[in-house]
Structure formats: structure tokens, C-alpha cells
Image (cartoon, rainbow, N blue to C red; front, side, top):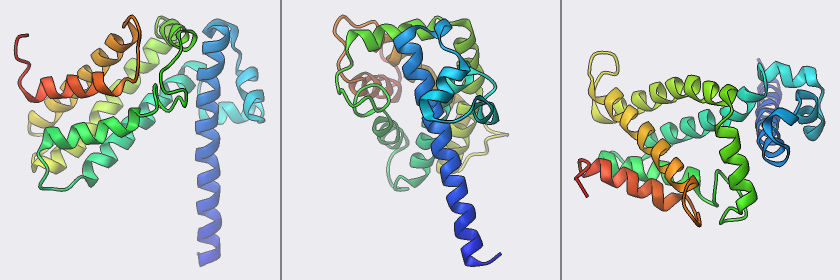
Length: 209
């Protein structure tokens, strides 16, 4: 393969990834605006300017398109954790790997403090059985990737040692609990402080309040 061929292949992969991300965001945005049951695959594809067939090349359905944002974010956290300085304590590294993925409000929402309409839509989506099922399925992959990154950082074996999977499961549970706490707040602001609090409580051994 020539350098030019490699560049073309890289460009194709980048375009495919951009399309996948755009379809996922469109699924979330339309579900928030219209309600999950009122959104069709055709609507999501049209929002991005592609065909329904193209959508089906990426996702098995709209629930998977919504849940994939969680998977992508978790993969970014694992990558960031591997990149943190080796001298940094594990729990500090986890905190600093997680928080950048949740800046600007909810998962990149540029409004900063999310408005009530957006929050209502997110709450509605999390009650949908199809989306909840996909989030549970994705959660297993999320913990596996995070456990591998933790094992690499702590010189443990992800298959033989309990520690990396235990920490990954604890972090996943903390992020889920912090997100639900944030969603149910009377006046939710940025989610990052809730996530930071959850991780720091874990790091401290979950002392009784």
C-alpha cells in the first residue's frame, strides 16, 4: 500500500466515524424533541443527510444509536486513563480521565447548564425499555475496556486478578449513580461536580456520611 492509499483509507475511516457520531447525536436529539416512539430510522437518517440503508450499516436500531454515545465516551475515558502520567495515583487519574468527557453540560451540550426540556427528554429516554436494554449491553463492554486500562496501570491481570474488574465496576456504578442524582436534582447545573464527588467518595472508601 502506498502512502497515498494509506491516506485515502484513513480519510474513509474518519468519514465513517464522523457519520456514525452524527447519526447517534441525531437519534438523541430527535428522541428528546419528539419522544422516542415518535422517531423513525428514516427521520434520523434524513437529519444527517444519508439513507436509511446507511443508518443500518452502523446500527441495528435507534436504541443502539442512542446508547453508542455512552460506549464511545467510555472508550475515550479508557484511552485517557492509559495516557495519564504513571506517577499519578489511580483514583486521581480516573477522576481526571472521566471529567473531560462530561464538560459543557450533558455530553457536550453547548448550553452549559441544561434546560428543563432537555432534561425531560433524557429522563424519558432512560425509561424506554429498548434504550435501557442497550445501555445494559453496552455497560458490559464499557467495564471490560475500563478494566483493561486499570490492569495496565496497576500491573495486574484483567483475567486472573479481581482488582481491575472490581474497580471498573465500581467506577461504572458511581458514574451511573451520579448521573441519576444529577438528573433528579431540582435545578441541575453541570454534571461534572456530581461525578467528581462520586469518584472521590469511592477513593475514600465510601465513608458513611
